[in-house]
Amino acid sequence: MQLEKVTAEIRPRGRWESIDLGCALVRANYGKVMSAWLLTAVPLWFIIVSLCQLISNAEVGAWLAGVLCLWVVPFCDRIPLWVLSRRLFGDDPSCMDVLKSLPGLWSKRLLLTVLCGPLDLGRGLSQPVMQLEGLKGKAYKHRVRVLARNGGEGASQASMIGLVLVLATMFSMLFVFFTTVGLFGDEILIEEFWVDHVLGSDAVFMPAPYVWILVGLMLSAITVIEPFCVGAGFAIYINSRTVTEGWDIELAFKRMSERVNGMMQTAGKVLTLVIAAGLCIGEACASNERLERVMADGDFEVHTEVIEVPVDRERWSWWDIGDGWQLEGLGAIANVIFYLIVASLVAGLIWLIHSNRHIFSGAAIAQDGGRSSARVRSVMGMVVSPESLPDDIAKAAREAWDTGEHHLAMSLLYRGSISALIHQDEVVIESSDTESDCLRAVLGHVADARGQYFSRLTQAWMRLAYGNMLPSDSAADEMIGAWPFGKEQGS
Image (cartoon, rainbow, N blue to C red; front, side, top):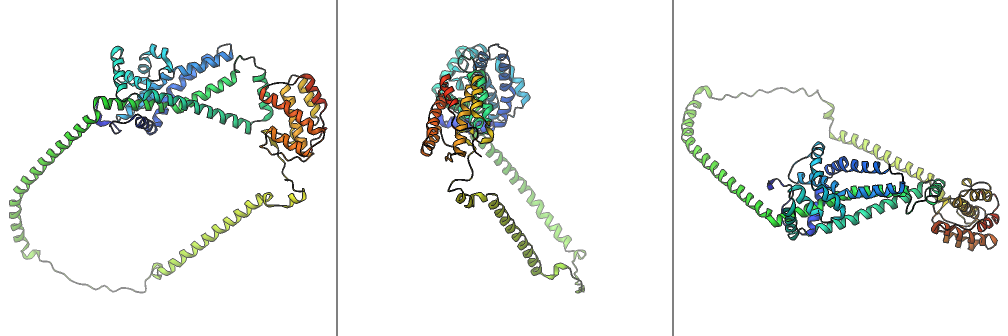
């Protein structure tokens, strides 16, 4: 092993400093590592997912695909480990080199890896021993124990931290996904998808579409985090070997030997130059005497003559006008550019004020009795504008309930009530208000039977939305028949 080619500083480190070194090594070679990962791990996952989709039970196939993709992660870890080990010692492997080494990497300790899968949390230290040193049996076990005692105890901790980061990344992606769908998705389409694939599903635990979403998010999180876990384990392995085998001392002696050899070579060169200089001094003296005799000859005498050339002062160029005119011209150009910039800024400010004039205008507020002229179009992500609702909401809700679309029927009643209260009764409801906020605003503004109806409707809606508890047919008939807001929701 040529330690002098190592691209990192070889010295004993603590466990956290070793983990930091591994993450820095991955960051420095992220392009190479991710290219190798996408070239090998992603196609393997694609094959597993494609095969699991052939299973007749969609829910079982989705769960099996997620488990199998997670189980082959140790095989995928061997790819970034191979790339990092080559890069640490100065090599530059290509994608073709990765493909050529793939059969040998995945065939080592195949049965043990299949049996243990991702359950071996200490594989960050043991995998380099198997893959890079090629040890087996008792020699492999003894080597892992020795390295674990000498600085390798942090491998399991690095694996646990990686698992936590994978879960955190996965659920962060899940939160962003549902937030994006809730903000920008079509409310009706989302409700129809929920009714068809969730409420109408006969899944035992979770409908297959949601399982596939979780599997995709899990594989994306593993792709982002797992190379750093491999790098941390590899750095812990390198640090353990440094402590066990004294790599830093070996490198120090090699550098000392190189310095001594360099000094000896330098001393030999200096001695050679001194001898050569001494031999040349005598020859140089004799040469100087001959040169002086030659230069003393009359043929080498230097003769000088001064000739005056008249200058035509009538000839001039525009540069002779002087620096003052040039500076004045540049100043005028700079003034023009400055005023153009100022004019552009003023025009942009005027356009900005004109585009947002409704913010600065108080006339609309005064004419409307202190109310905001812009009514909200959505509340809690639900569209409540009149044009988004049918003309006869009670009739549409009745038809939806009779056809089994219970969630849609209740949604029409709730959205229609909020729309009518906003546009007919001028109840102030913000787009960020919750069901409880809306109920408080309505009860504080509407004291008649409509307020009591909205209170009963809100309770039924919240039980359905958050507890998946449908109202009885009689209760639904009563709420549809007692719809108190008429056919119009205001304008």
